Image (cartoon, rainbow, N blue to C red; front, top):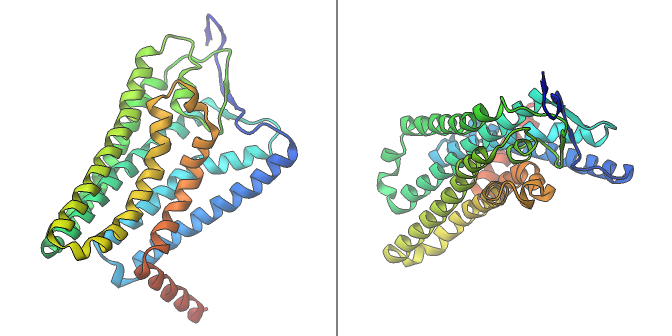
Length: 309
């Protein structure tokens, strides 16, 4: 297949961490440790929630699903990035690039929806405690999880169906550590202004609106608690602070990358690393270190494994 501007591209060159060998070796070790900790930490949360009957509640069920999505999101980009740090030729095939973008937005869209569900769960638990078990039934939780995956699939397909058939030629250099829509679209041989606006609306605007919605919902919860039971405000604030931190860490980089996807932010490697490498590690740390019940369950699980061995 040939286009006016040259031969069709079959692979992209990633130049996110081009530099001296010592720096790349340092980053290889650092990101390998971070990714290992991410997999271990999130897997430990999933196993702890599944194995401990005291954690079979809606909040921990949703936390287990969040950990699974975090682990998947990190796995889409981090292993490839780690191996590229020791490779002389840092490249990814055209279809490998498309697959990376597809799964990034699948897991990202699902996690975005799940965070909203977790905010709803906290609203019911804090503001309607007597009806909590009735409202947050197992059936509703299952439907929420299915909904999050469905929205993630629709979110990624709506963008990928317009991207997968774009013609790429001549310029195949991506100035980042992984493939992402804004950077890949800019390499197309045709006019992509309409597609760029669609990405801003689909990813950028949606991330921003969800972030504002979540902050408003947490504010409403705190206001209701303050009026109903002023003495419970500190407890509610302590519970919600972990959620607010996670939401900020997740949506912050997304808003900068996708709300201005075709400016300087889209190729910002720090935001890219934070979004795909750091945040999936911080989520389990935030939820476990601030949750006495989770830490107690993890110690119990560890003691049982030691006794079994």
